[in-house]
Image (cartoon, rainbow, N blue to C red; front, side, top):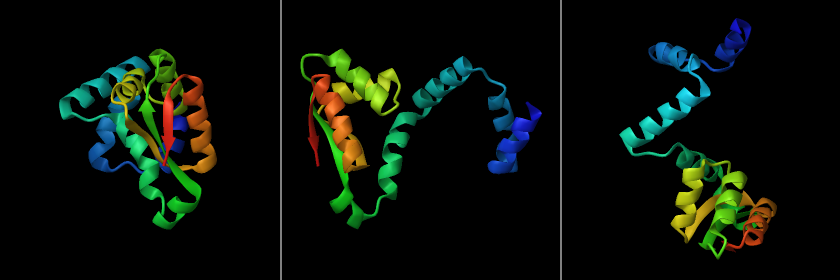
Length: 136
């Protein structure tokens, strides 16, 4: 276990001011980590999933977007809301609550800056689940 931590420490340089905090987090179980994330989300009014969804879009170059990328927007949920939530949860690797919030907030942007092929595949999964999707 110590060898794994040394390898991780070598790959990720941890600033000294966060070293104690990182050590405490490393000792936590998955359930404790999940609980910690929920507490931090409530305390600071943020969602860890929102960052993950917005992250890839920030790196895309504007001239590339017009040619090889697309944005996927959920326009209507349809009759089978649960299937749509499951499809979004799986495709975007979100938690159940985050996926449900996207579905409840329809029309909502699901992902931006995706490769056109990946966007079409996501759109197909969602339409198969009963949703209406727009590629932009």
